[in-house]
Image 1 (cartoon, rainbow, N blue to C red):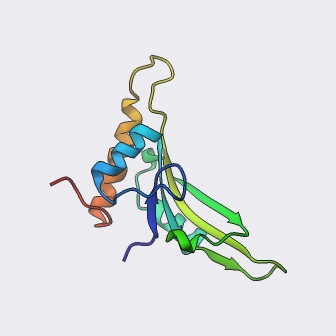
Image 2 (cartoon, rainbow, N blue to C red):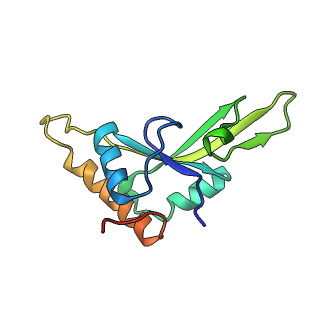
Length: 130
C-alpha cells in the first residue's frame, strides 16, 4: 500500500499519472512534483529517509481550515483547537528547469528527478516505461 494519497504537480488539484514518464515531464515542465496525503510528519520523514541525500526531498505541510479529502488527499484533523484545522503532509521534489549560470537545461536537476523515479520504481509505487 502506498503511503501517500496522490501525486500532484504545482497544486493539489493538478493530479498526474503515477508513471515514471508523467513524473519526469511534470518536473521538467513545472519544476516540481508533490506526493500528498501522508498520515503524519513522521511518515513523511521515514519516507524521505529511503532516498539518497542528493535527491533533496523536502517535507511539505499545509495547515488550513479546509479538508482536502474531496480532492482525494488524506488530511489529519486537529481537534485540540476550538475550530477545525486540517494538516496535510507530503513530500516535494523541486528543481530549477534551467541552469542559473549557463541558461542551459538543468542536467543535475533532471538527474535528481530520475533518481527519485528510480527509487519509486524500486518501491513499486509507480509504473515504469514499457
